[in-house]
Amino acid sequence: MSSITADGRAAPMVNDADSDVGPLEQKHLQYANYRAVAGSTELTKTHWHIATANALGWGFDGMDGVIFALISPMVIKDFALSLPEYRSGMQIALFVGIAGLYFWPWLADRYGRRTLLAVNIALFSLLMPVAALSPTFAVFVIARSLLFFALNGEWSLGSMLVAETWPARLRGRVISITRSAWCLGATLAGAITGLVAANFGWRIAVMVPGAIALLAIYIRSTCPESPYWVRAQDRKRRISETLARGGTVSDDDRNWFTKAKSVGISQVFMPDVLPSTLVALFVACASTCIYGTVGAWMPLYLSTEKHWSTAEYSLFYVFYGLCGFLGLCVVGWLIDKIGRRRTFIITLIEGAIFMTLWVYSEDRVLLWTFGLAWCLGFLGFWGPSTTLTAEIFPTRIRGAANGVVWAIAYFVGFVLFPFVSIALQQHTGSFALAFLCIPVLMIAMAIGVFLFVPEHTGKELNEISE
Image (cartoon, rainbow, N blue to C red):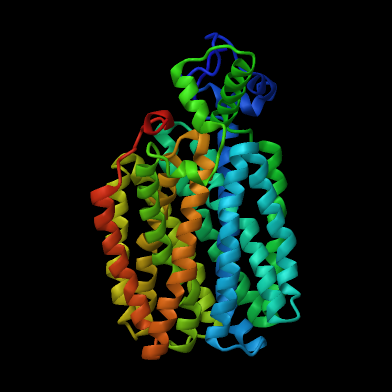
């Protein structure tokens, strides 16, 4: 059997003999779900299982992030905290979560994508009840930290598995549309908070997503390993064994092996990868800074400054998630039709305009109208953002590179940037100025995307990077 990419096209050979298949791939080829993505241009049930698995991961991530944001006023009241005390506790949790952003993808470059994706989602189901039962804020912060660490692998693992198995012509839209499940998770979090937290308290509400996350078993049983990763492991093993017995290998193999045999942070900043790293860092850091304020402080802003009840802002989050889902689905279709860069810019400008109008609105109808309008672009731009970081790096370090990029971005956007938001709030007595930073950042990002982000629409992964 020849070496074929997930798109059915010829891939770089992994063995000296053109018709040979490496031992690891021979093992995986025994399974029908691997064969379904290893050498066919046709979509199969397995492709849809992979997409569903990625969507589930993003859905759990959306539930996790949003439900803790929605219950923040209740947690602050329950533990009698000041705003800076709560911010500091959450920043500790975020800082611990950064380790997970690198740890899981780094492991994925060694042990594969599929199993680790299932493991970090399963951990989420076990840790949610721990957070719910926290007797003190210190225990709550510890539980929240472990939750962040466990689930943060989704930022890279699911998108990588989709990118390495789905056809190139559909890769962008599938990553974006599965990313939209985050919005459905946010919607579900809004419903859980409005129906459960408002009536039974935040602790009961936090228990609910834990049971749902047991669907991680589905991921482990239906999804195959990435053919790109399998073939890279076989190539590494073949070259290593050849060199060990004193044989010779091609210059291309030798150079590739020198880079691939040790996967670590330094690899991400090597001269051949550095341009991709800088582009990905720009996109990821801008993305997290843009989202940081809304993700952390919008429920508190609506509660304390717009005087919305828990039920009302929870209902807003239900529609916020649904609008974001629509935005990401539309973006997913657009990025494979008109290109990544153009779609990126359109969504950023749309979000910036309506976010500005929303901040200056006092009327409830306008708050709802402009708020749901900015959701389309504000959440939609995450489609091309996560697509870019999933496809821009070589297979040998795709996991580690994604981990490094999103870990740095997470630190910048979710640990450092909240200091800016809180400083503005403390200085002005309102979050309005902090929220007005968002459209400025979105326009700056649109300019940066236009100037620096390459267009990868329709390209095979091996055409983008080697």
